[in-house]
Length: 325
Ligand code: BT5
Image (cartoon, rainbow, N blue to C red; front, side, top):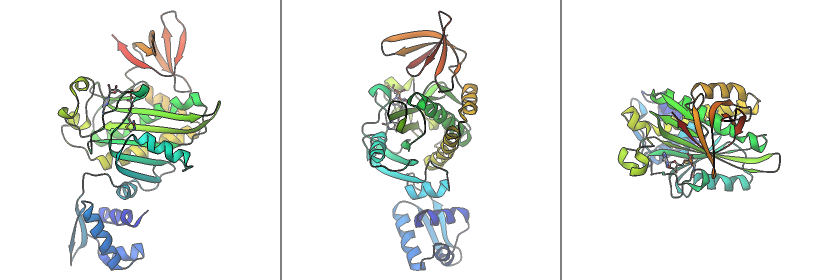
């Protein structure tokens, strides 16, 4: 943990205040050094009171993402989030992570951007990413998976997002195969898994996640308003992005270690339980091909098993699903 992260953790643990001497002891630095770190944190928007009786006290936090703060909130994880970087603006956080991957950075690094100028969805579609309104981030993974098994990562991420969003907001959250998280039947988050692979082995995967946290209705262009929503709109109150980000990274770390331990089937069961797709008649558009059938379950790779009109069971690895009623 960095010094700032340690100071923020200590301040959060001691809401009545913690003395400069105590902080200096914990961090093994001088009280003057603590004072200068506190000044830096104040400049970032942390409201820290100082007084002779209580020492330092955290009374307000900025609505900005700060890597040290996220690290402090997250604590120790196995893989995901042991390194966190926050950019004010990027083209796409997936681009940043891809560059880190090519530079040989180890897996688990998470890159957030307050806004993206070229946020993307699948097939080059645009992803709306207004400043400070959402969580736009990507994670570098180096899983020991075959290329066709990377759908497992998308499925597991949807499960992790569902768990964390439900527990942080109390909202009822659904999943639509393969990469949508739904609230009140509308899209509130999307996942974009990209990879670099050899024939039978994944070199690295970039897991990109976009969550509409505090967007208001006016932040969505009219064509998206019918399809998309934000957690704030549905919960009726703003949601702390830092708290939500931490809860998500913790759940992602859990499901990722399950996948690495070969325990995908338990995740698939949880996914099916919350999935709006399974059990319905659906149409899947794959390029210019459309397949209709009944979505029956997930297979071991995370593919959707579709019982087609001809009675065959067909595994679907990608595409756009619409539920037909
Ligand atoms: C996705 O694609 O749902 C994947 C979205 C992944 C975004 C993250 S943000 C961090 C990382 N960096 C990136 O550049 N991307 C990832 P897809 O299933 O293709 O859905 C795209 C469609 O969703 C668009 O064509 C719009 O209709 C709709 N859409 C665009 N922006 C949206 C938003 N903010 N919220 C809800 N729907 C949106």
